Length: 216
View 1 (spheres, helix red, strand yellow):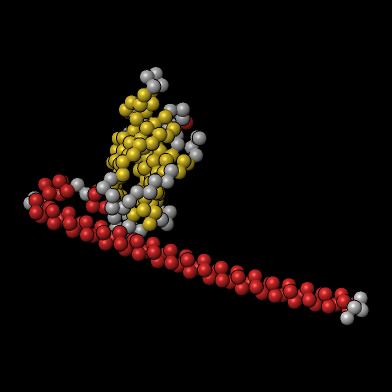
View 2: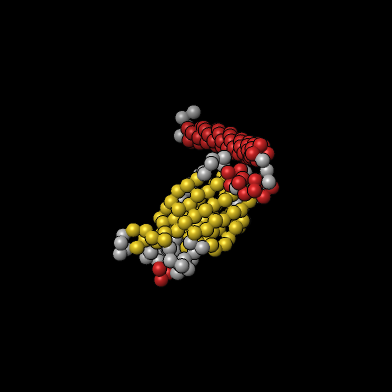
């Protein structure tokens, strides 16, 4: 496959607890995912790379020097994140516009190692699930009740963002439907006009034909 972009569509729920998976790619291939994210929402991704060892026919931890380039683009195709991490890494970004964000990963290996195979374990957490509340509790010295209230407030905020995003999607769908219906209406009118003009022309043509043959 060389450096061709292998686009794998994996749609994760915005309010899910976690999105865990693993996939296989060549050392010079790219794998992309699509994540629907509301605006102003934090996303945390963690991954772990293993390299296939042909001698033992199994995957082993990657060798030093092998890293992963993580690139994230927003719905307007603007680059939100582009950075090279280690073989085991963690990336974080915050969405600034609602919609489908494309998350791509590929190794920093050169074509000399294009025959190698990688297994990438990946986990994506979105919204309040991306927050480390134990760290917040220790930093802000919160009690269990205060921490629970903080979690509930974050959950309410995330639900509000999700509802706003769903309303935005519904509005876009309605606009698309109205536009499609309008085009279908005008196309039907155009077809009707063409049929009427064609019928009128045929009648005139037949009348001229019969008059020329002195049949009428």
